[in-house]
Image 1 (cartoon, one colour):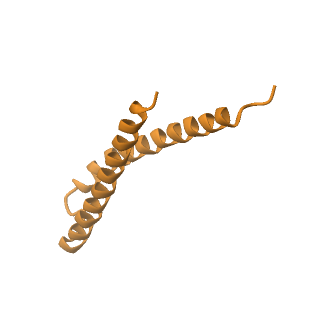
Image 2 (spheres, one colour):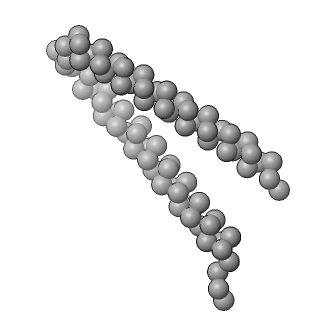
Length: 81
């Protein structure tokens, strides 16, 4: 019996969501790895620290936008019957 195109698309979406979960988890793990490093005395110069703060601000903005997108997807998905 041939698989329906809709079923194939559902499997693709399932895999992409699972991959996204893994990626987000890896980001959290990387933050956990970074925290003890940046707390070391003499870790960086004031200029490098300012640059690091700018990078973290950018990462936060991207994460917040991703979260808003995910919430919009969830909201719409809940309305579909």
